[in-house]
Amino acid sequence: MLEKYFDDIQETIRLANLRESVSKPVLKDGSKKSPNGIITLGDVMENPEHEKCDHALMEHLNSLDDECIHTMEILMLIGRENRGRKKRSGKTLFSAMQKYVDNKLGFGDKQAEINYISDKNPLGRYLETGIKLVCR
Image (cartoon, rainbow, N blue to C red; front, top):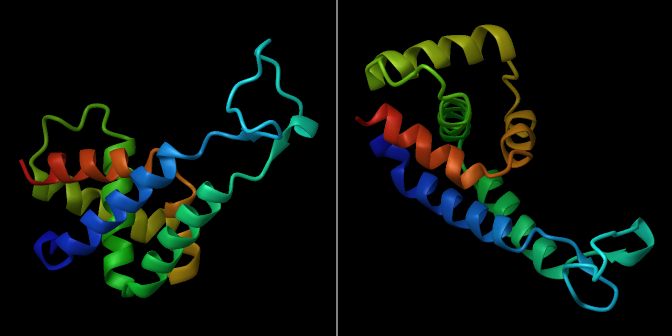
């Protein structure tokens, strides 16, 4: 199943990592850090580069089919919750997480799954870890 979506997952990782690299807030003076280390909401403005990267990631995710999104959700959860999973085979690990997602989370709605996935940081690292654990 991963082979079928490998290119789409790799593109998601690339876009997520790009978004993560620019996700720090930008201060009104253009810097990313306050000299005294204290930032108030009045000091922060939107980061247009982050918005651009987030939009690209969301467009990409919305272009994928339901099964691909579901597969990425499973990989993301495996990568995020990888404690104690090193002893299980990749196939067993994927099947167990798939059962958990289907029975417990049960979104079943593509947009809800996209929102859930895209809200996670560092999404790229979670997906990379999930792939490594499943493909070993």
